[in-house]
Image (tube, rainbow, N blue to C red; front, side, top):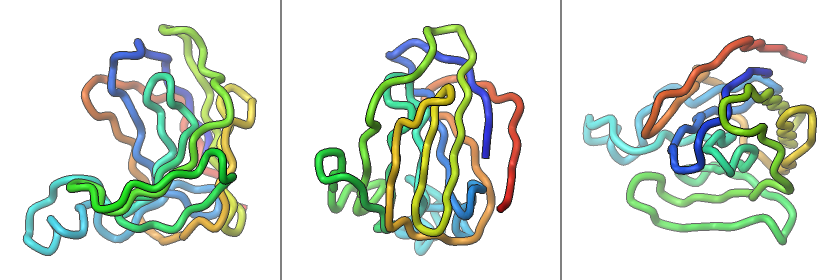
Length: 157
């Protein structure tokens, strides 16, 4: 998947929730959080892998509600039992590659087997391994502010 989004100010919580399978962003059958879904309340984050677009954190990847994801030991982290995302596993980005606020960025997300590669403006900023893959809908998301996307391209291998 390739898309463009404009860089924003660092205090803006713009982000993209995306679910990955074979180079295409996908999610489980439902985008409701598992615990809320069981109660009929679509709250919190869905069970997914997210490629983050939050200003200053673009390229980080997170697995919510126990989604399997791994990466280099110095960038891998876990936060277990969170109220809205359950068990979170993540891999911090290797480097920053975002353009200054107001300029457009290019985001490339590719999953081949269980290896997820994320590029920002042509630079490889993350690699996660052992990623769980599930079929489902594509979701582009922003929390806390307006975001725009253009030139969204899905490419299956």
